[in-house]
Length: 132
Image 1 (tube, rainbow, N blue to C red):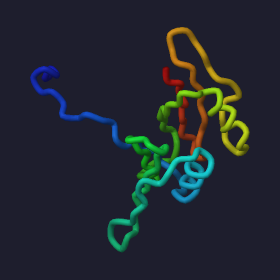
Image 2: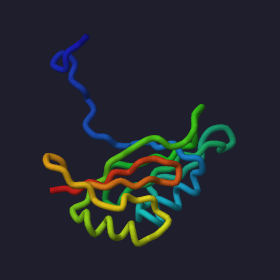
Image 3: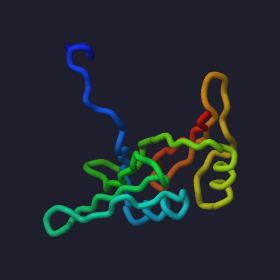
Image 4: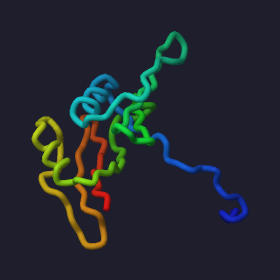
């Protein structure tokens, strides 16, 4: 086993998180219309353009979220954290939209940032975390 001092990583960012979704168009609508994310990439590839690479992200974010069809498994079950400086306002906004599975209350515990969770239509968890 090599120590990190012997072979340091060249990785500098988490660029793309990936969720498995049942329907890329439905997931695209959820993330753009409900959460306010923007499309970063939407391209066909593979033989005859049979596959699709779809990425979304909050406006201004360097990190992106890829929405992928299942590969030998069922969709859902993943989780990511996104950040906001105004957690209460974001919770109120998402709760008021309707048709978004969002926690009823913001969770606050000593030693952790305040946060709440919501689920996309495929059951992937999105934790909205308050930044300092």
